[in-house]
Length: 275
Image (tube, rainbow, N blue to C red; front, side, top):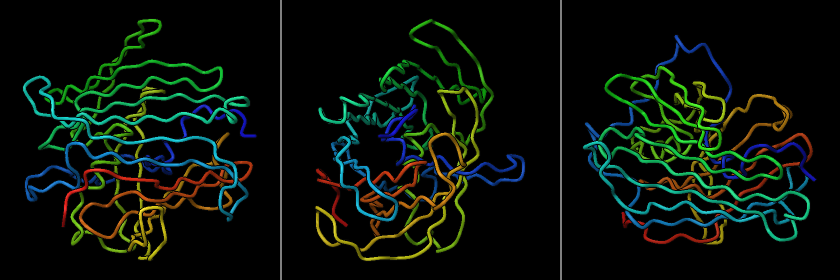
């Protein structure tokens, strides 16, 4: 089984990419100054199955299930925000070996498409965490609080900084006509667990038609380069498939770990907008 996996399965959908010199990067501006349309609607709910198996083969052991949901619009410090929630848990069988029960919440500004607040409540085997981050955009810093021991910290950020959940939804909102194969999209992510800034990127590499639980779909396959760690292997790259339309719905992901691979597949989706 997977050992020392102190990160939620859901985060394999979030850009945890290779590190670069931060001063040389041009981060993507996700604001809606040019495009007024968004890739998702209030009430969108996507459900996924997580499985574990050998590298380069379909997962054979169901490890858990998770979902993303755009719940509603709330007003936070005078700004309208999408309240987005992600949750995931292990199956009863997998929990015998490694129990997972995680919740993430992001409050994404509806105009600037950057987060104003982020919350994580993690229970993974013996590891537990409950943290809150408040992004003070006018002053370009984030203040965090550990809700277990009440430890507080401050960290400088830029106007482009995303949290791990908002990064996924902001990336979905890149207009299809602005996506070019083999172009690199740089994102600056705030890692709340470690209270640090992580320069990150992904690359759309090819278009593929794949079969999924919601039908046969035209997709864009994107490469995510993960840094070798106690979890990730450097043997192969991580890939994510998103629909080749204005929704950019994440439908599939494959990532190698030190022993085998994790596979994520879409099961169902509700309340998609019509093209």
